[in-house]
Image (cartoon, rainbow, N blue to C red):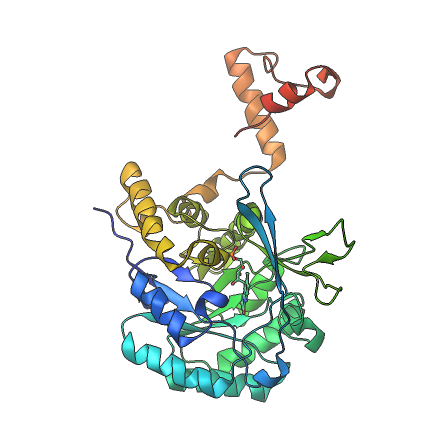
Amino acid sequence: MPSLETIVDGLKLPNPFVIASGPPGTNGNVIGKAFDEGWGAVVCKTISLDASKVVNVQPRYARLRAKDSKEIIGWENIELISDRSFDVWVDELKAVKDKYPDRILIASIMEEYNKDAWFEIVQRCQELGVDALELNFSCPHGLPERKMGSAMGEDPELLEEVAGWVHEAATIPVWAKMTPNVTHIEDPTRAALRAGCQGISAINTIRSILGVDLETLRPEPTVEGYSTAGGYSSRAILPIALRMVMEIAQVIRDEFPGRTLSGIGGIESGSDAAQFLLLGADTVQVCTGVMKFGYGMVQPMIDDLLAFMEKHGFDTLDDFKGHSLQYFSSHTELVERQAEVKAKRGEKSGGKMVDADDQWRGDDFVQQSDSLARG
Ligand SMILES: Cc1cc2nc3c(=O)[nH]c(=O)nc-3n(C[C@H](O)[C@H](O)[C@H](O)COP(=O)(O)O)c2cc1C
């Protein structure tokens, strides 16, 4: 029987399934529920020292559904970090740690560009006994107006300075959570790892506008008739998250061996998780999936991942972590490889496939498109 147990930055997890920062970790009550259901670790909703500045609106979610099945495939939110006071959080996180001493509790934290504030929040979280910290350098809405969240994650120099302050104060592992709203995720990744962060979490939500209501002509989600760009999550972002996780994993493998990676974005099954692990993630995090399916989804995810491992004869997560990274190449090399294979087979053309753009025809355009696709 394979084992899902894993040790990441010295933290022992019963499985790699972690609740991502957001509503599923928004108070002590729901964090306890997550542990009861079997989640390997919980990252709490992002907390800050002065919650009085955090004011949310309703509605703050909008969802994209598949045309026929009505399945939710995309989810936009304009939710801020926690609006609950830091003192309340201290009491609740302490109580959770007392009740679940062996479970891994990670505090997601965010502060303004102020060294003293970062020192204070790091020290107070450590004192209360959390196991690790996740630095939210990635919330895409609301907070950047205060130079917080993704305003830091989009600026590697600023990120490195702030992560450096945290490193000075921290005695527990620190993960930096990346925004995907940058051209090259490798740049903030390197900045965080240079500053001393043990791990990278990626990705947070992608800046989006879910749609425009064709009756009212107002963008969604509409708050008193108006909207603002928000963060996109759920199934639709999984391929983008996989690409960024691959790029971060390559940086870790080549330049910062031993550092860790927590993959996030659209994960809803053990098979989804397996793909992130194959691309180099040590753990995976789930937020919107829990909002769609509830905390109990972790058990089928565990079974699904174990079935994948059994099928391939993998005993531990390390047996396949990062395995698929070796299969990435440049497009130029793909062309060369394919030419070699075709030459060996004595093939001149790709059979029914479109080899060159002048072969496209108008009458069976859809079939020709299908012939070039996998899946
Ligand atoms: C409603 C909502 C609230 C979120 N709040 C936070 C937050 O407070 N801190 C944070 O780091 N990420 C937050 N996130 C981002 C998630 O942790 C996660 O990075 C993102 O949603 C992608 O993963 P998913 O597709 O599994 O949801 C939030 C996401 C959603 C949908």
